[in-house]
Length: 358
Image 1 (cartoon, rainbow, N blue to C red):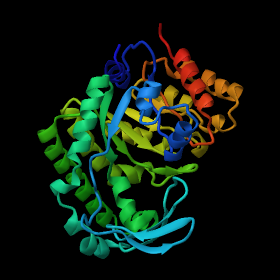
Image 2: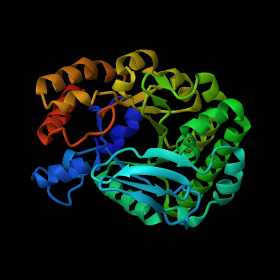
Image 3: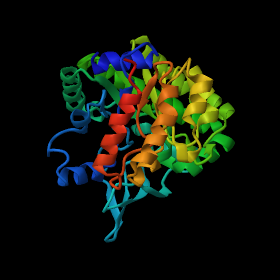
Image 4: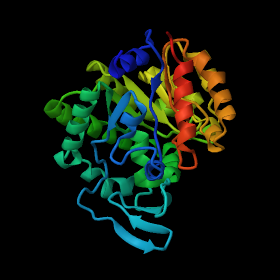
């Protein structure tokens, strides 16, 4: 069974030969493993580990495409820049990390209407056609599931105004946030039309939406249904109308939102972050007949590079969640460089052995 055949069946919860396999890594993990001689320079992680999925991120959704990021402050460890959304972000220079949100030009409806909305047009320059074309061709050669990957509306709004102003807007000026949601959803659909008409369809759509933090989602299920779900329905219906299954990523605790995500049409939930409170086994029991899963393996069990700890995590979950043929092996976040190559290799080999149906 090829990877594309396997993943198409896993996303539809149909019988397969084994569970799927994919992973995300911090950038310095690959460079360290390569420097240690475990991976040959220039070899992709997809090839080395035999992943079943290949992603391409072809869209640039920043408001001002021609804006050159402005360096406001720089130290030995960090750099503070203002980007084309008017956001002031601090990033570490020595290692990969989530940028610190310092300040935002947009803090309300007026700021959105003046500084952002007029620039959100389906400009062809927003599309990295060559990236999409080359990755699509490579995935076809390797017979992997090729996913168009990108953010959906929640992940487009907070880079513009920050979580605090976005959430206050949902409570105090919901029509403003609904306008942002509708604008970004339409821009996404317009750009997809342009790209797919010119370069052909992917095999699946992968939306990234970090809608939770530790122990809580950012919004209630009711607020999700009122404000965010209409965009999710529109973009997912667009995909389904073209025969494309949809994977939805969310870091953080989003269990209360899962019923709404299923209503919106999500086919697979990823990444199922354990340290935030997500429980893969509970989700499988509640929704495994309607939803496929990717992730949910506590990446912290790999940090100590102890094989017994890794084995216990895999043995506790995989024999259960493979039951409906809808599971893909993945950590619950990304693999950092403190995880040794040997530990991750063991994680993959044992996981696929436990996940075999033959």
